[in-house]
Image 1 (tube, rainbow, N blue to C red):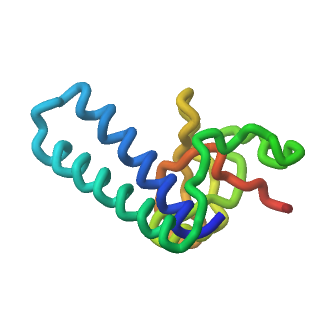
Image 2 (cartoon, rainbow, N blue to C red; image 1 turned 90 degrees about the horizontal axis):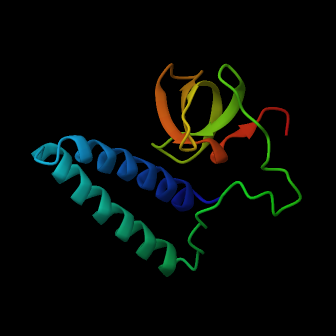
Length: 127
């Protein structure tokens, strides 16, 4: 997965979170601006990927179509490699929480910061 592809997925996750927050607070100007900014960043990232000849990532990232390598089941407390939104690179992290919508919170060991990403983006340690 390229940096642009990983960044695009992270932007899409962030957009989902902002849109969920807007459902409960539709008049929040900060959330509205953030929603608009994320839509613009997503569009620009897609344009960049198209100009570089990259395919846009599919929506289903955990289908197991590649022989089941992506079908690892993660649980809270598991160690893994997760993408850092800042640079799209994968770093060692611990799964802190998993939600029913396919997202999780991970804590990166090298920085002691947490981020939200799709569970399907996680990679098991040892591969």
